[in-house]
Amino acid sequence: MTEKEVSHAQTQIQSQAQALDRPRVSQRPTGTQAAPHRPHHPPYFDPNYEDRPDHRHGVPVNPRYTDARIYGAYASKKPPRYVPHPFEHTCFKPRKEDYKPPTTCDEHDDRLCVRKDHRTLTADEQNRFLNAFTQINAMNALGPLVDIHSNAVFLPWHRIYLLRMEELLMTVDPTVCIPYWKSSEEQAFASWLLGFTPTVNLLSGPHTVTRNIGMFALLPNAAAVEAAMSNGSYNMFAQASEGIHNSGHVWVGGSMGGILTAPCDPVFWMHHAEIDRIWSVWQTAHPGLNPSLIGAAGVMDPWTETEVDTRNIEVLGFTYV
Ligand SMILES: [Cu+2]
Picture: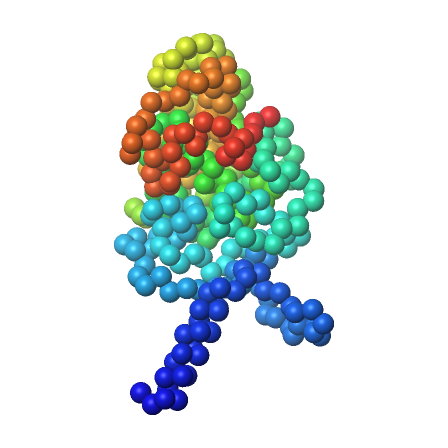
């Protein structure tokens, strides 16, 4: 290498190091004229997208799980290039450190996602939920999340699973929180979901949602929920609520009847939000009674949250009304 080449290489290394160091949000130095026209960026574009740091490894085994923030250890290191987002709601409720989008929230609570009884949703709120659901599906972000579904550590694991889904929905529409379906009280299916049967790309191939409502089971009734609530130990409560949960799955039937397909149906998330809500009510009535999960069993695989992290829903960033 000539001296000139060496000094050129040094300059390059320096400017690369500076590029890695620079602030996340590009700033125009004061006193300069207006910045030249920039290409149209998505509203929470990553200013470092074009030259992100080289992690010195390739995409891991399964490229379906693109985003570590949603898919945990399954994720590759390449986040989706573009996430559709309605311009009139340029607002985001960050839950994780690495979400650093522009935030101009004014109208809604940016601290807690308020999960409501689906019967209290306005038509606009229903549309937003289904629209966000449709969009994450069109982005092929829903299928991988469905593929992660497992029954491991029933209550705490599903609490984080719902949270990841809610975060995904919020990347499309930050006003969306998962509504809950109080099936024991309603004894009916949400009519506004009846015509909504999306097709989701799973590892096993495309799956179109089907239902067999009321064919093979009865919904849990209020007495069953009350009986579950009266359990004085976590294990007894978890067992009772798993029973309530199972009959909801079988009652809806079709996709909801199979563990590999159930989360393709939006009612899955609303059903699990109800189970999670019941758990949170029970938790308040029984402070300090937590599942005993030690070591690896206490980690909400493929995410990093532990059982301890699942104890307080408001700390996680949502609440039920
Ligand atoms: Cu379930």
